[in-house]
Structures are given as C-alpha cells and as structure tokens.
Length: 227
Ligand code: 6GU
Image (cartoon, rainbow, N blue to C red):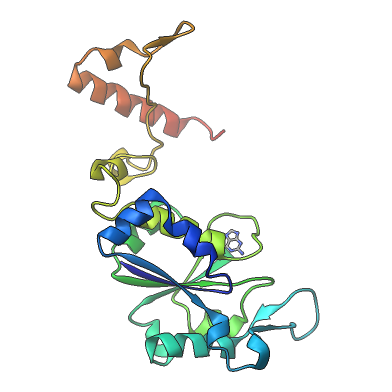
C-alpha cells in the first residue's frame, strides 16, 4: 500500500513512522508519505485557508489550494482522480471507521487521505474531489491528522507480514473471524496472583476446549451492553 497524506503538519507523521508496525510496513515496501499543502498553494505567503463566506468562526481549507496540491502530486484533474483511487477526507461527520472499513482500505494499492484543519474543508472539495468521508468518532478534533493516523494504524496492521504474527489481525475484536464480536479475554503468567486465578481451561492444554471457551466468551461479550 502507498498512502499519501495531505496535511499542514507533515512533521507529525515522522513520529507516526517510528512505531514498530509502521516500520515493518515500510520494510515490506509499503509507504506513508506526508505532503504539505503549503508547498503547492497558488496563493501568496503559503496561504491555504480562508474565512467562511457568510461569516462565522474559524478558517476553511480552500478548494483552489486542494486542487493545486492534488494536481501537483497526481498530474491529473482531481475530479477524475477519485474515480480510480480512494481519496478520503477525514471529517467528524463522515462514515464511522470500523473493522470492515479498515479491511476494505487494506485491500487498496494506493489511498489518499486529506486532513482538514480548523473549521474543515470548503464543501466543493468534498463534493468534487473526494470519494469517501471518514470519521473516527462522534466528537470533534482540531484537525484530521490524528484521525488519519488512526485510520493508517488500523489499516497497516492488517497488511500481511506487518504484525509479528499475521494471525494477530485475523482473530481479534470486531473481526469477521469472531463474527464481529469483541475478543475473548487473555491471560499470561503468573497463573495465580493474589488469589486471582487464570481459568482452568486455559491451563488444560486441551486445544478444542480452549477454542470453545474463547468463542463462548466472545459471544457473551457481544451480548452484554457496552461499558
Ligand atoms: Cl476524521 N476529523 C476531525 N477533525 N475530527 C474528528 C474526526 C475527523 N473524527 C472524529 N472527530
């Protein structure tokens, strides 16, 4: 996967890259590139945003700035780009990120993530340049950067070879393997701590019974109300 992230804060992604599983993804030929809107803006003094028509608080990312950034990168009219590439705007009101969407994106060779700041994007960006709007939850962040990192974190860990053990990403909370249910509980040594014992079945060495216990736990967790 090649992920391009358009942002006003490309340096934030340098930290993101230092995570073990992101480093692993790079070693396997995947990449995350952060691209600065200011470097291609057609406006003076690196201007990229402006005050909203009609008044109100905050600044809005300009459509001409966005078009220039996308054209410089892809050498194509961004109106066409979105017909053959996922161009994803991170917005608080977008499609909620879940395991199914992460799996879907992990199947793409190339994706583009657009991070807005302040009050967000000029609506014409969303209408004409973007194929998807994605949100990581119903609350507002100061910008799309952290949301983009959340999307990339969950997508990259699904790529084969990125986690130490590929099976880690198969049977986990909300995965198809667990029928969308939360994961079963895990225990490790010590087997007893202050009288808090690990369930006997996990120490039994009986693989089929362990499997059965885990499925039952996972299902029970799916049925009880969220904390
Ligand atoms: Cl994707 N962006 C912003 N700015 N805030 C958010 C979000 C995205 N998802 C939840 N809150």
